[in-house]
Amino acid sequence: MPIVWRDQMNVGIPEIDADHRHLISIANEFEGAVRRGAGQADELSIRSTLRQMQHYARDHFAREERMQEKMGYDGLAENKIQHAMLLRSLNDFIVLFSDGRLGPPAEATEKMTAFLNRWLVDHILKIDLKMKGKITP
Figure: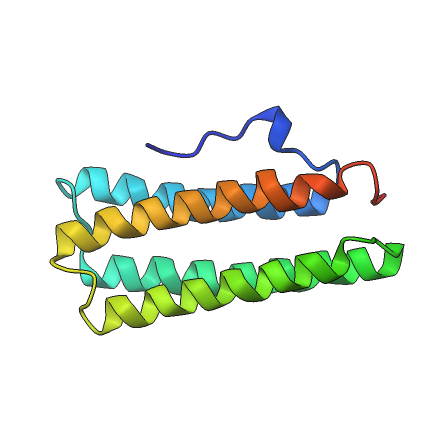
């Protein structure tokens, strides 16, 4: 099921909210490709989505941390730890996929969709919303 952007996901910082929407669009584009491909995506689509997510997440996290540092945000240390853990998890997922350890394509696709959705929504709702009202654009 695609991730639906809801107002309660807004952190109130236009650049960060736009980044979050873009990350969600990457996950949703992948899920759409899966639906069109009868429940599975080809290896190239999976690799492409994982790389897009990895690059954009890295850029987003750097932007977010710079903004938090500039504003003296007291949750910066926690956010840096969470960002490092998320990037490590994504990298581990990429390695598992590349090594064929996520199972056949349909199973790997299902695992990837669940992973991306959980990863994004959890990060936005549990970590990023803490900065709402504490950082000004």
